[in-house]
Image (cartoon, rainbow, N blue to C red):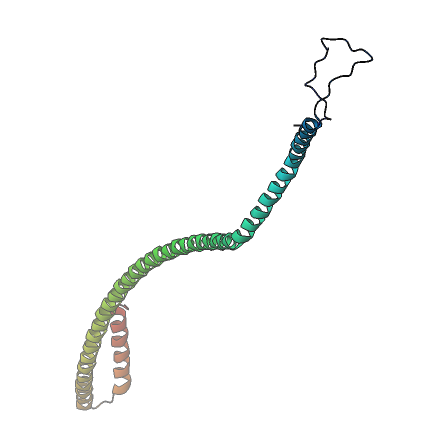
Amino acid sequence: MSCRAFKPTFLPRRLPFSLNVTESVPSLPSETLRAESERRRVSCDATAAEPDDARDSLDRSRRELDVERANNQPLQDDLRRVSALLVAHAEEHQQDGARTARAAGLENALALSQQASQAEIARLGDLIDQSDLVYTERTMTWRRLLREARAGRESARLVHDALVTRLSDMVTAVGGSLDVTQLVRSLESRVEASTYAATPLL
């Protein structure tokens, strides 16, 4: 509502009678005019005070909002800390998942390595068993050959002694002489050569 200058609007625009110079216009009571003027002034003051009231209300609202923000600041700080903790927990959980995946991969690789090691150990065990078997067989063969060689040497010694005695007796009986030692060495060399040629090397 705007405040306008007071104008009496209750008077008729045209009077039903003509005014003479000698006649006077009837006037309103001064109390009525003052009351109307006071009413309009109060109305103007109230209208002018409305923007001030609105500004005061807006300032109060802003101050209340600032107070609410200040009161809610610890809660906001707690919310930020909780959010940071949640983010850190999520990152740690993700890292734990990655570590678990790596551990599972390492465990699988270790299991495969253990299987390969066990297979290699079994293969080496078979080779060792085969080698032991071959070694045992060769050892037994060489021992048999050694026994046979010893028996052959013993037989050769006996033959050697018998031949030496026999030849000595024969040569002495006819009145001659013979180098028995050289003859025996030659015979031993031939027998030894034939023995090595007949025995295969394993």
